[in-house]
Image 1 (cartoon, helix red, strand yellow):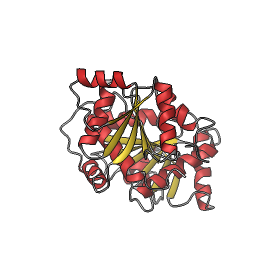
Image 2 (cartoon, rainbow, N blue to C red; image 1 turned 45 degrees about the vertical axis):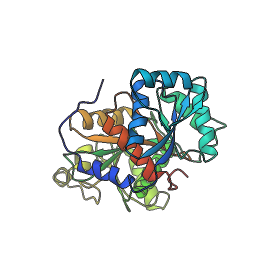
Image 3 (spheres, one colour; image 1 turned 90 degrees about the vertical axis):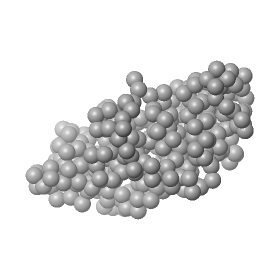
Length: 312
């Protein structure tokens, strides 16, 4: 499945990438780039001046793939690793040693990479639960929109949801959103004890009231309609500082998040980028389905956030 290419202009995404150009190219460990799509993504990001990729994997295989695809490796460092697992572990070590500032997924499975990043003995672990965030330039919405978590956490507990919110808020701060508005969505906008997502949303908002989650304005539960549309909220007599203006949409589980992500991209024509948060360095999870634009934008996000403390 590939993301459809459109002629839609994405000015917010272009501005995001332009901001990343003001910084030195980020040293990024590209883990096991043993498919053409993975290798070309790193090479294109290098050509754009966003990253200085360090390729980690079987050198002979990487050079063979590059030659067959007519991709130039001039000036690119290759660190030998026999297989995907070894490459992931080497990337973690390099990040811990300060040799690289971010990690980019190549052609290995996501579980293989994240297993090394957050394994019991990983030096990249923090006290926080890891989570993923998507950043969207959606033509139907009036500003950038973030979505969490549609990739990593399947059915997070309330404790894990609190970390997911904190990660997203710190990420928003790092990219210049001073006080993000967070809509915590559920099937309905009222608290129903039979719907755990509504109870969790209310608990997160009360945690924010008590200073357990800071730096943002939270509201929930909100249905997606009254989260994203002020008219819908008014129709239902919802008084909210977030309705119609969220910077961040938080979903109750991966089922909801993944469906919403794909709906925004495939139906609403949104362009997106994404990162894994909650570790010592940002993790760029590229996919064969990602457009070149999405890969470049994800590298830009990493460049903008790598020097912040959003992972602490």
